[in-house]
Amino acid sequence: MLNETLSRVGTISREVFDGIRDLDVETPVSANEIREHLARYDFKTPLAEETLIDDVASMLRRWGVHVVHPRYFGLFNPSVRPVSVAADALVAAFNPQLATWSHAPGANEIERHVLHYFLEHIGFDRAAASTAFTSGGQEANMCAVLAALTYLHPDVELRGVRALPGDPVFYISAEGHHSFQKIAHAAGLGRHAVRVVEADGHLRMDMDACGRAIETDRRVGRVPFMVVATAGTTGAGAIDPLPALADLCVREQLWLHVDAAWGGSALLSPRLRPLLAGIDRADSVTWDAHKWLSVPVGAGMFFCRWPDAIGRTFHVSGASYVPPNLSANLDPYTTTIQWSRRFIGLKVFMALAEAGADRLARTIDHHAEMADRLRASLETAGWIVVNDSPLAIVCFTHPAIRDGSCSARQIVDAVNGTGRAWLSDVTLTGRGSVLRACVTSYRTNEDDVRVLMQELERARERETA
Ligand SMILES: *Cc1c(COP(=O)(O)O)cnc(C)c1O
Image (cartoon, rainbow, N blue to C red; front, side):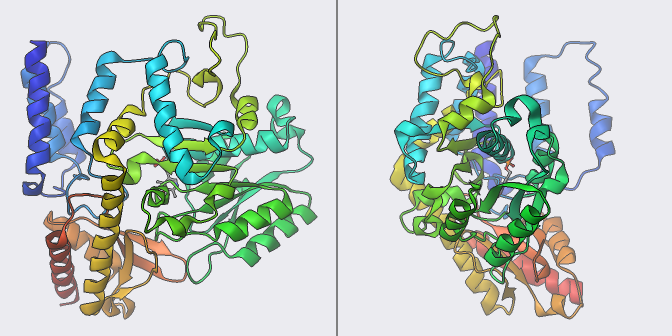
């Protein structure tokens, strides 16, 4: 029975891999339709495994945006590799508990090994850095805020932000990620702690404005403690000036956190890696494997140059029910936010080991090339590209949108409604609402870009008719 169950799941997974092109990227559905179907699950009568698996697969097939589709030009959700699906299945089967080192020496060391590989690409010293897998970029960013605050203001450990002489604040560009709003709230800083600095004409943090904001805040008694540099903004792939921000942070004695949740993977490509020069001067870095490395959610990564800061922030004492730590290795429940800890890193380890570093780099480059192709096709067809990111993200508009004949949103809805391709819209500093297409699928090829172009042109003609 077990055998049949698992092989059924294997068959369905293979069908997803082989047949994804034949599915619409998205099929409209109402909550009611789903709820009506779910009403039959009253959990009174047990179901046969096979019936259950087939029904669940059918729900997943029909009711969701297929982010692993080659024409999903959406929100940094990658097509996954079969080996990383296998990894997640193995993790579920063994269910290792990574809270302590001694409970899962193998799993903990596999994570350490693969994290150190990425650490080298960032340029942090292996011997003197702290690393951890997280659920995603938001959790990694939260680690950064907590570690920065505790490191610069040790009294925060016991007394919280009350220990500070004024309100703690940190800086992020207007194009930075909005997870920091929730993080500031959850960390007890309050959302006003997020000082939003305007972006320049290239959508990067305006350095002068950042300097001025720090000065103003200090003058009125606030306590600046961190600058967040975004390396690859979510909206448009802009990369904040890392070396200049590193200089600023040294001068002002602030913690520099680089949020490279998506863009970090550019470090693996010899061609794109120079774009992130200066990232080695950060105090901490967020880098998601689940954005651009072809592994399923959730697989974020957090890197910190100061293990001391991590120790002070996440240490725990007196948990006598946890097995004592008899090894020289730190227990993850004392170095991370999570307590019970899933083996997040296996899918990353296996994806990297199976593809090899060169093929992985080629995949990253391939995504960027497909975006270049889209950029060129758009411009040939009279669309206007409004971002200048060398990464795999294209933001664009059309004269018909600019003159008000239709909106970016209308075109996005029309394209997505065909089921043939999927993209999004975004509002960018100084550019208003524009269309946004990014490439995170190794499956995406020139034909897929052509289909997207066709659908865009059709949608524009229809919407302006
Ligand atoms: C996606 C993203 C995040 C949030 O990461 P999750 O993995 O979704 O939690 C943070 N910062 C940037 C720049 C991102 O693109």
